[in-house]
Length: 424
Image (tube, rainbow, N blue to C red; front, side, top):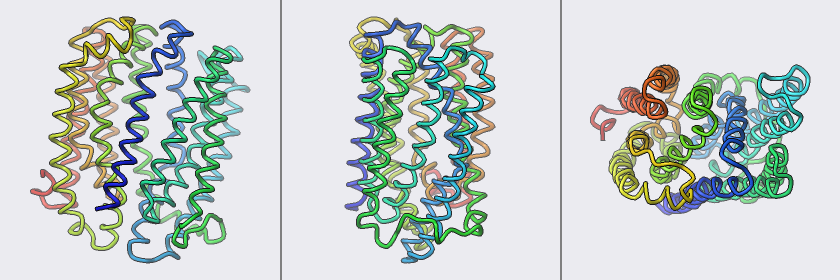
């Protein structure tokens, strides 16, 4: 229980920092830029998100297997998994860094033509690749029962990256300066986090000598399934950002993202509990399979369900006032848009813990496949509805797809746990 409480504290710190960054970014960036330029930055920064799939889920799968192995007391297996994942990621990230340089500066990408835009996009891509190093360090913290510390350090790295972006904005006031500032601070923070992970690691060690191809092959199936979650997120978040910009213009992108950011505050609060439980689900599953996690899952799922509904309801009541204060009236009021996005947030928060229960135990393959298909269908639905209802249509399509994802998650969970526990 003490580990869960500590993890929730670290999660609250992380969500607090995320919320602060999201709330502060708009007024800070609009101090130097107008809505159109800020919308261009949002669209450009959305493009590298597809690189978040570059690890093909290997980091998450390795972290789960390491934690389950340590739950059984098998340090040798945990190190084999860790070293195998490290070799895989070093080769993957090195290759993708070279490919990014070739595509952005050599071949060129549509819509990214100026040197400033190319430089910014390259820095953003490299930042995503560097973050995988932080993911490996976090896996070591999780497996050695220091999830709270790893989470807190990851939060500080994320905060330092944002602060670097703000420094770049103040210094250069262009896209490249913002992206470069974030990249430099991300690299420094990741190196410090990796160094810290070596202390009190319970026998886990950075290195390559215990790497085995068999371990990589054994992680391939759940890892490939993990890759589908960033793909679904990219479709839902970055995809809809780009769709809104294409159909309605950069200024409406800023409006849509502002409302979505506000709505996702409710999701982030609920996610604090679910992510605090991740390592405990992995450890308990390693010790005794699905029966070992059923009690903890049932209690936490109920709490997550009612919490998401309550937080979304509160935001619906105070949302208009908060938006007016936050944006200083720069973003116009859209009551219907807020209602759709808060319904999305309540749905998303309600199935967060069931999803984490599957992901933390590497039982998520069917869930991931279904979510990608639903997200793609939701993107198409948003495109159709936007032609009729404008930005409210985009939000409606996203919300209906989220409801379908929640139902698919419950069906997937029934295969691992009893029907009554899955619906708990």
